Image (cartoon, rainbow, N blue to C red; front, side, top):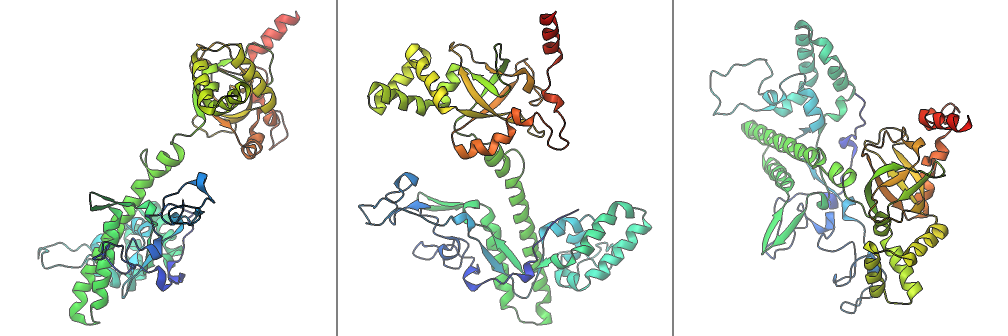
Length: 447
């Protein structure tokens, strides 16, 4: 288990970053300056990142323009996603969630840190001398507790299965307890007004629970008569901390999580999918022939601009021309496409899921657009099939056109011509050699 952790104890939290108030709104319906939506800590989330002062003009298109309403220039503000705060715990420490889960593989952490309450049955079975000692005593006796359960694991002959966890905890003991809770940026836990009602992500509730318990603990005197109450509050904070952790993991994980849904599985502009077929004419290994309709959609704005210039018409008229040619092409649009291919030399990225192998993503050149609008297949070189783990039984590839020279240069090492030699050993990449059917055809032709 190789993890890199931040030692929260070494982080000095400035006062202007501390979230100390569980109240969200003031009486005037403004965000509290020390709450979880503080504009001073997390930025004003009611303002666009690119906008004038009043918000009348916004968006990158208006960057640098002066608003007639507020007379302020449209500027780009610092992204609020980079702004975060801290809950600085007083007179207590919590177990960091990752370590809580790892410790849970060794013993029942919850039973140890939960205080004995008046509602607990008198005949409750105590399984170890450390049950219900609370978080404070758990930290004080941590080495002793670890040694106790280590000896039990060895006696019960399950030491080998737990050895790596004990060793991991021992190596990273300094990171287990923390007196700070990170409050993530507001865009990751959004809030909004609707019909004069305030709604926000459930994550915010758990932050407020922790802040409220922390406020109560700060008011308690260092007196033995408050020990049980302090233990219960700390246990409640730890429970809320774990719930917070689980919600964040849930938001990141799975098909509906942020990473897969918005980073890996989201829709992209200038992209398409189409069934592959072989190129039947002379070609290079890095060429692709696109179906007419796919090209017209992917390069919609390029073709509209060309039509506007060639016909000397407005953008609106050029759009209607493009739309008419979409299903009723003629020589004019074909000639424009050929001119575009010759002068622009467009490139695109081909991808085949899952992208776990060198060659699953290829950079190729668009050298031809097929004339038949009813032909929806994309033609590629036979020699790239193994790289893409594909065949001609209905397989589809993901297509992303490369409109930026920077992207073209970045992906150029993935051009099939640049993959012919294996960069690790200098040998020929056998995946790109001629296939049996090709060799058989050459042999038949020569004889």
